[in-house]
Image (cartoon, rainbow, N blue to C red; front, side, top):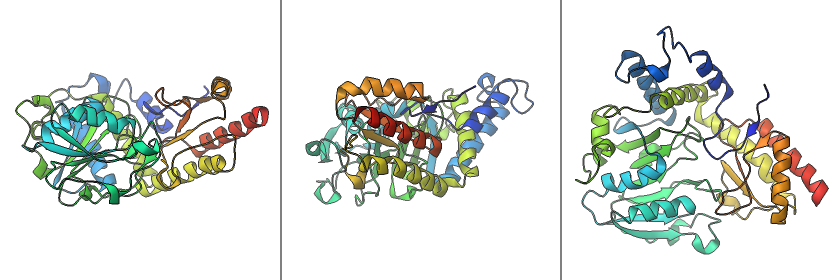
Amino acid sequence: MTRVFNFSPGPAALPEPVLRQAADEMLDWHGSGMSVMEMSHRGKEFIAIHAEAEALLRKLLAVPAHYKVLFMQGGAIGENAIVPLNMLRGKPSADYVDTGEWSKKSIKEAQKYCAVNVAGSSKDSGYTRVPPRAGWQLDPQAAYVHICSNETIGGVQYHWTPDVGGVPLVADMSSDILSRPIDVSKYGLIYAGAQKNIGPSGVTIVIVRDDLIGHASPHCPSAFDYKMVADNDSMYNTPPTYAIYIAGLVLKWIESQGGLPAMEAHNRKKAAVLYDHLDGTRFYSSAVAREDRSLMNVVFRLPDDKLDEPFLKGAQERGLVQLKGHRSVGGMRASIYNAMPIEGVRALVAYMKEFEGQHG
């Protein structure tokens, strides 16, 4: 069997040891005589799986005791509605910072539920940077301030945590959670779809400060009320059991690699290999401001769009897959999440050099 180097932005590559363990346990989890996919979510076997996954997540992220960890469904797009339904707390407006396609989706969805103040935007730069904090026009009466910590499509990432005063900071961390240490206490709420660095699609992680739950809008569905979910230990309705199980295996793998400091070192080393090549050639280009370049999603362009298909075809032939940029922006995108080995990035750079030699 030959494994490709999968640069997909999500669902993304999973660590091979995790896949092998899941395969070994497919028919019989720990002598239970059944697959995790067949277990009752209220049975002792799955409750143990769920508890271990939560404990590992809390340990890796150093989640303070006064925060709840929830396993939900609906993805980040679902949270775009679930957040205002829970977090407005009777206030009429919220602040959003616009750094690209996913920020725009969050803003559009939130406008169904409240007045949205776009406190800062990098639209004028073509979404090639994070707008400097000094230029943000924040409302001290806002219910919360929302950011997208890493724009998967545009390849722009916060490398700092915004100070927004006493207003709760909310972050969509779908594409960079668990890639580096963060100070959870600086956020009121963090949410993340699992399918980048945590596991397969289907489960959404929510980390929310205790005092911010219990204020859901009367129109909020019960299954999306953070207090209802927390009070029922994420089992008010049937959770995505298999996705939580795989997430737990990924969390164990991250711990075995040295935790988040080791992940950050690994990710910085990989990104440096690719960005160093981009900076040393005139054939490929990346418009993202150097100080805001994503360590997770490296976007770049060829000198002529007519070369895109030949480039992708040659990459596919060499086992380098899912490099096509998002349809809204074009170009190329190499997603190099935790599970991407540095050998994959080196193989991509070697191919980029080969292609340039043929077409440059």
